[in-house]
Length: 539
Ligand code: G3H
Image 1: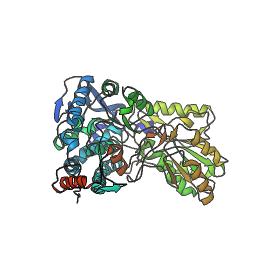
Image 2 (image 1 turned 135 degrees about the vertical axis):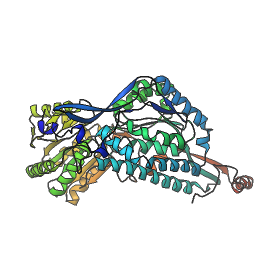
Image 3 (image 1 turned 120 degrees about the vertical axis):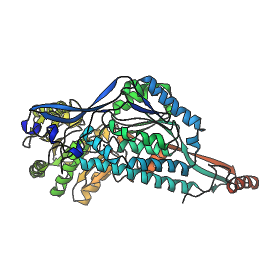
């Protein structure tokens, strides 16, 4: 137990009042069929990664609790979503695009009123720094605005008839059915809403189960969801995955499965669906993105991008750089500069100004990280930086490990935390082979200057991962870019525009271009007799 890390935890009285989480938040409400129900059963305590110093002893702060619903409530939510979809005949799936957009706009307005509450809970539930928590909230609002823009654009391009080979047709995107949306703890608002909002706006009805941590922060939005959408269109449940979502999948009534988490979790749930061909999955899963620092890289840039890439939000980003391959000729300087940057990082509580490294929310996480470090040390690596791997309660001081090799667990496992494994190489082919043979395929970052060598790397890696970053850390944004992965890293592609596509299917009305058919179609359009067959243009 490191005293200097323990000392970072505040006494209760020293928590700035504007950031204090306030009284115990006992949440008993959940949303089914347009009503907030009150749960009378057992609850799940919500422990913050923040400990408080009580006269020299440290106590993990329990900030509230959430309902531990059962299979029965989960199935109630499903029945509500199934009824609201009504085999595609419900009010929501048949509503005009413009009307659905206005419901989402109402929601966005109400959501913005809850910014301060949600941001505070992001800090307390998952330890995300204030600035990043604000960014997560604002980025999510921007994403909703961009989604509306993209849908208007999509609708405009569908507001016309096409003619080909004597046929005339109108092609539009329509919903898929009932969607189950589940997000991750590291972006419990943003990543969840990047599937939830497109699913809703395309006319699907939704069951949303918040992540394992970062659950209470959805509570301030429950009324906004209730008041912005028709009953049953959005249903929000809580509880253990195996008790709730497992039961949903077993019914075979889930049409779309949007899940951000581990590939094991996704596989286990997908297997429960009795009609796999009727289930469309959109998955964001594990990743082990490498940063490859070539011999001629601009070291200052490479180090600063790799520090950001591996340590932003304590390395708890699916897109984080989780292993660095560094050319032997620069390894010494790279490590020295990296250590110097680590020593400048500020450790503290999520609300501390300029804080970089904060406590980790997952129980047992620091033990796991410590095991990775010990395993690497036994197999020949050293912790290069002062205090590297020191820990206290939920704090873990970043550990720069060198030289790392394939015998070590940290070479293969996704640490999802502040450990930076550095592998020295002579030939870039060693780094390429790592990516080729990996079970993951999300992104890679290449640092270098020689255009020929960079081209070779790009061409060797372009069939392996979803995004190749040049002299830049790995990341999801901007949200207009496709976000995906290969192998165990993802299924489907998300971006603002792609998400609208993955939660819908193209349907068309087609006819031989005869005079009679032209007349019928013309009448329908002129008299505005159909929502689907229409050339109305959204302004
Ligand atoms: O955890 C995965 C997130 O989508 C990463 O997003 O690269 O913008 O931090 P980011």
